[in-house]
View 1 (cartoon, rainbow, N blue to C red):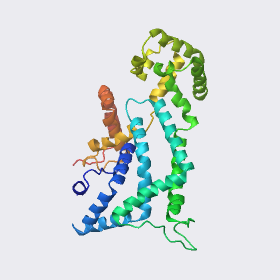
View 2 (cartoon, rainbow, N blue to C red):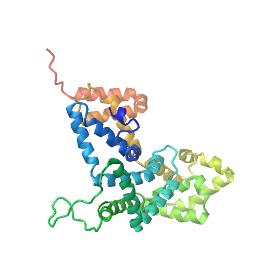
View 3 (cartoon, helix red, strand yellow):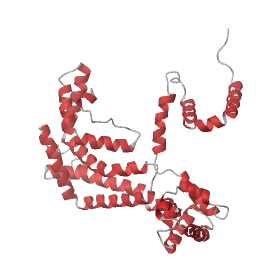
View 4 (cartoon, helix red, strand yellow):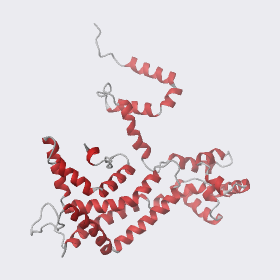
Length: 340
């Protein structure tokens, strides 16, 4: 039925942030269409459908809902490309970090000029409200308020600016600051050991960043190895286009016994995930494992089956060893079923 009334509207995915941003963006774009579809569903269909549609339509009529949907949709458009890049296979984390810093600076400018920002958001909210025949008004105030705060404001726009827009911008700035803070710089700086990035900066800049990496991860001798590591790639005489196509794992394989510290740094960079996308994608494993035959299994056993499904190649290589361990484990437990 959702496909019939709103064919372009995807469902909200709770496990993948990139899909969540996309869902919010498309939802905000199609608010009038969704509202009209809910209005039609509230008048036709069975009792349960009419009831649910009427409740959702009533929620969309609230000014707070329209303001929240507009501001979240606005900044979801900005953050969606970053989420897609962070979950891509070929990821340039350094450039992505620079882009996030640019986004953070832009949001800080919106916060400093919050009057102009709020004016643009409220103008868009009023346009949507006019299409839905809804009046945007601030909620009433009383002397004693128990369920929400009495935000002082002289107008409707000022009320929503103080109660929703400013707190949202502050929260967004703080979240970006925590995820891309100065304490994460050593992890990003390890990527400078890749020859493509290393040869684009001076030797002095490279030494400064290597000192940060060495102090954070307590890796000895990295300052002395980096000069030889840089010399190795300079002597190869490869172009930047060729260097750009070299994977980090290829750099790791290039490290011989003469570069133990560089090899340790590259191993750290290869081991640390940039996002939780790998974990998020593992949820799809349940579709192969969580059948009706496995529905009564405990969580521990289900997690083990999921790990076997994800790492099935590794399990296949050690099949005989795993089979013997399973038989030994099965033999240790007493049989609960009594055979007559």
